[in-house]
Image (cartoon, rainbow, N blue to C red; front, side, top):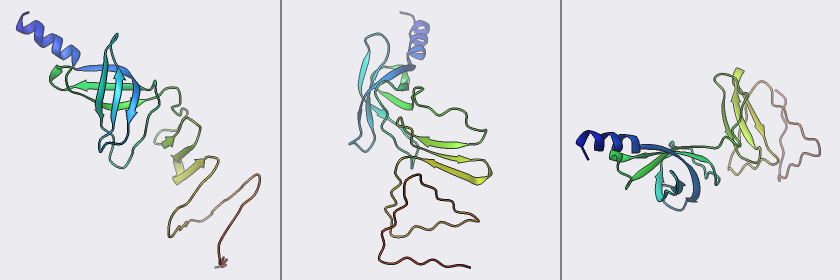
Length: 154
């Protein structure tokens, strides 16, 4: 095989799309099993994520895998997306976190944050919310459990 042909093959094999099959989230750097080309399965592929954000994707999510140096021995996954559940219809500049079950947090226009879910749990020593308006609505009930409640008018 000529050097040019070998180089061309290595470049072509350096990047590929695949489907995520398994996730090992117990390691310091998450590892995944990805199904790539026909009958090509790679185990223990390191998955890089943005600092401060982490997720465990569902089986069948799409992965973008890069093989360093073009050899198929050491791959890394640097992007996983799941078109089955991705939010659509956001405004330009919006940012969102979401799950396959429909829970979502949308940081939207006009400095608005919208949280959509069944239950919100604050597990903190101190929760502080400030703003011109705080709106809480519930179709069933609002439950507050505390040894003391202070309501102050300013």
